Image 1 (tube, rainbow, N blue to C red):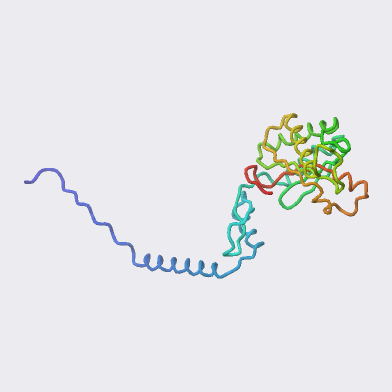
Image 2: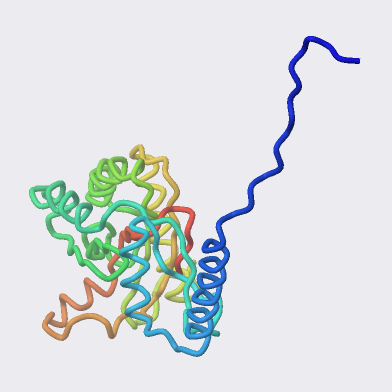
Length: 239
């Protein structure tokens, strides 16, 4: 029975052009070819890092994941640029009566602000001195500026090779850690609320000190406390 309604017909899908099938096959073959070349090669580490840094600007390479392709890193978030942070810290500390005596070093993946031992502690003590509390307060002001930038902050205590002469610390390791944690506590009391990791390295880095320092300078710097600002974000632990 016919009605006055128009008839509708669903047309079958049109076939793709023949050249598209050939193009798809060619693309798949090229991809397989490059994967095969990659699997047979040993990538140069520096070249790989340069490529990844240019493609992904806020990525950092830190840990071993595999060695099938000679690639020995994984990716974690990068935080604020260290050159920028170095300029900021220099500006905030160079005119400070205490922090102007600190040493700022720029390494590949971190900034290190080294506070000489006699700047923040009395000789042979793990309790922060009055001057040390002032330095901690000034440091807290700087670190508060960094809190929103995400860089991981670490405090590392050091000692000289002479055995510690304080009965409550069995070795230089405990003594250096006690000094690091005392600095962390002082910075927190001064108002910094971000995450800080504390480490004690005793005299394990004593040989890293430059030979240009005099004997007295080497002793004071050997007992230093380092404030380390990592290139990576706070959640990325880098020992």
